[in-house]
Image (tube, rainbow, N blue to C red):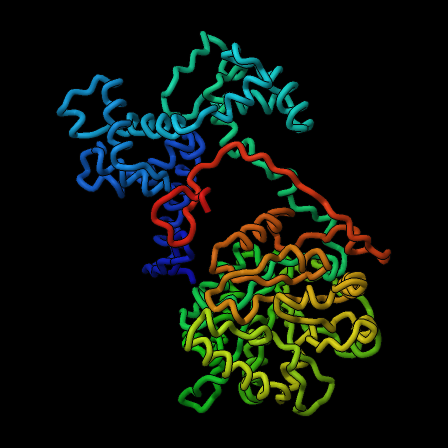
Length: 587
């Protein structure tokens, strides 16, 4: 570890490197850290349009001429999903060149970077009948106003209009200074008339403010870690959760990777899933448990490597709140015994081992995140026998519960559906090693009725696919589901039909108290964005205290809420899936 390091790229790809000595490694890491910090500082000094073109420029300027001709500008338009016909683009290009007084030779060579930024900025805004930022400016400060003073901006816009009453004059001055230093497209000159840039901004800079992180909808105060809220039982929290964490792509034939666990943990997931299966044996006839999506063509990785990755994360982040391992155990007894050994020896003191006598004697209360900092908790099956017993695994996290749509997904998935049904029958009753049971805290139990569930010890929990939250909370059952989740835990995961690793909307499961709403983090979609937004709060620690209505013992009334959003504009939006032409709003 003293001679190695990894560079993590966007998309979770890594470059893993080794070097001869620790001193050289540390020098390289320090240099890379300086580059990243310098880049982040420079990025804050550039407007959105300029920053976007900087990202694209090197790829598009193939001949390294430092200019973009008409064909290369067309490629830029395609990259930012701004569709124009060749004729319209050509006409706009010629008109712009005429404004700049470019001769034929310069027109043929193309536009410089600054000229290209201005052209893109102008072309985009020429498509609007009325510029949205102008509407706001005129409404707040008057159509004839060219500059606005920071005191007026603070009082009329931030305090009265935006409701940001905690913003101070000093904060506005710092904001104005940063805005006036931004590199922007030069559509109109910024004429401060010799006035202090800390105290005034123009309409042009106001538009940059509206598009910047300074005007983000998310409340920055909610990003702070609220340590005083971390002493409640685990059941009081929504917990950032991952489904089939090991997969890099679809559920049928993608690669399994240890790196996905590191990615999940660093993005804030505090519940990861491990599907364990019997693997080969080593040269000494010792079992090697493996992790993969059973009965598919997904690749296999060693179970021990997954635990090592989790342990490395904890070593680098010893103050992290507890990590829950959702263990889907398909192993035979000899392999389970090896798994138990790996848990104790690899995780060491980081493994939370429950007090078996206390679990049997009383219903009790779940421990708090604060009391389990730096710990790993196992969710699986428990038994209180000293011998191997057969245990009902009908409530395990099997992806086959909702079946697979044969008409949509074809023969390969039809075969998977048959296999999953067979597997469910096989795993209905399987032997459970007491060594592994002893280490397990959360016990997955099958749902029978709410009366039975509510009477169960607090460490007993339910798991089910995405349809279960709806089925278990119909009508009057909704309050029962919420009551259960005040003292116990529930986990939801994507239906087995989602072979492309798509996601379901997590909002409903959260609304009935589910703590662990697991999603496929390898697939960026709207559901994952909702999840990222939810867990951006509280220092992105992976734990969000549920609202009081989901934690108290009072019956909950279902109150509908209507949220109205006025969209002023959008930039760099993706096209509909697989679409080549057309604006994304047409979908």
